[in-house]
Length: 194
Image 1: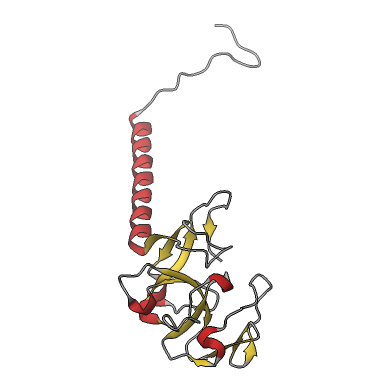
Image 2: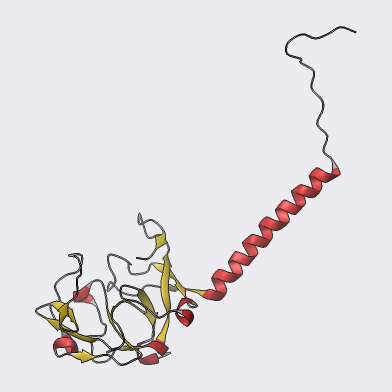
């Protein structure tokens, strides 16, 4: 029998064994199970709704779909800066409103000279938001109850929000959840809502 020096062009044929087939099926099963569990979690915790109107531009656009986390506020309270979904005054015949939390329970909110003041101090917002043209009911100081939030749209001068007499401060029980994830809109990348 001749000895082969250096590289050998002879390779062992790989066989598909029962163990290999079993591993493939086990891996596929776990992948399918993980996808199913993720699907169930997202749809039991989340809720998909469409943005109506331009009040949250540029963060959210009219017609854009967002995923609402209905579970987070069962554990934690909304915080300043969160974008929430709520039914105004708990009206189940209304569409969901999406607004940003500005004032928290127990705080005093007022709009003076187009700017938001919390407990007599100006709210330190960046220049992203327009100067508010109409203070609405927040022209006089509003004291929030222990379960009330003051909300505004990001597009301050094209928003019906807590400044409107027919909405006012938003009660905790009318909040459906936190806007969690936005679906892509045109060239806007998909991502978490800030």
